[in-house]
Length: 275
Image (cartoon, rainbow, N blue to C red):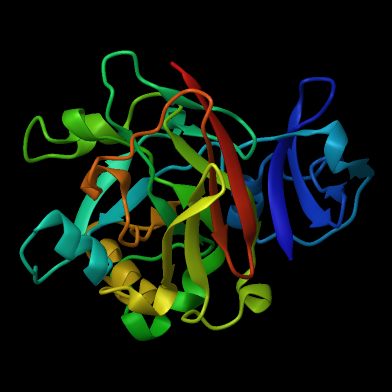
């Protein structure tokens, strides 16, 4: 099942089940959950409703209002090596805010204060069932689905100090979409490739199985220090090949187009514009 959040032609928002070139509006009824996050919390992602053409709605970030966006850094060995970072005993963790994200098709915004805007294609995990101190063996039962994520990074601001937060939270610098795919449709994690293309050229390409910290271990670690709740998002890290580590560096600029594709999900596509 594919589930997307969207804005209708009249400006109201909802969510629904994507079927080909249409979406079944699951937020249309008087008693329907108003958002995908609310539907996950209520366990009500099945159902029926009016059929809308995808072309008639504007997609929103998969979860427009997540309670938490937790990001994992340095989670592919190729990326760790290209950064020169030491091997660590625990995942690197930082956070993003919801207003830093845009939907499939919306422009990523180059900040005016920096010329070092970089791409990071990633697999995002959406939590469906709350949990605290979740065992790795039980972690996948807490997952509602998966989506493509672009953890766009403003590198000079990321390097201002030891904390990544400033470089990860400029408005409109991250992409999240186009929809969430449920685990039964995604299948076992491992062979799916995380690929990023810049203006059609492949710049990142690694399987999910190359993660240093697999998804169950990430969920176990994160849930040890915070309660995960329905609609929370975990971005699981980027493969090697980021623009900042190329010679010369490959920075995003207005007029570029960035695609993040993951097998079983689809492609998150964003143009790049001046912020």
